[in-house]
Image (cartoon, rainbow, N blue to C red; front, side, top):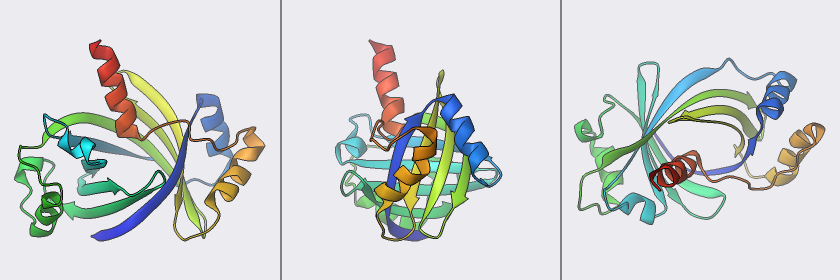
Length: 187
């Protein structure tokens, strides 16, 4: 279990850029994680700039509550749990985190995102290369997640420079992209 602030920079990249980046760094072996996101019918979690998910990696299940502090920073509450069903969570600590959202209606599954993740770790940050699939959308994303305070934008730009890229926030979070896709497909 941990409660911390998460700071990350992310950008969508093409498959070609993604392939170049993962060949240029000694990324850890890839793994698949399934992120199942939840919200109420009235989108009360989203309206509070928060996200609720259960991440499954092999047989491990991790509950996460993220609450946005600013455009780069989230408060993140995370704990391994024994179930992949939101209604079956009985851990008192996790339930107390959910109470912070003051939900008056039940949480329902909103979207499932499969991510093939690779991580390259430096002293200051983790560089994550993600290949994401939700519904029939496939995208590639590079995340720079701070491990300690430093000029992350400068360092991330130094990483991206050899690939003729510069950090510009060009994408919302995975869940926001998935919701945008769902809204567009209903029109």
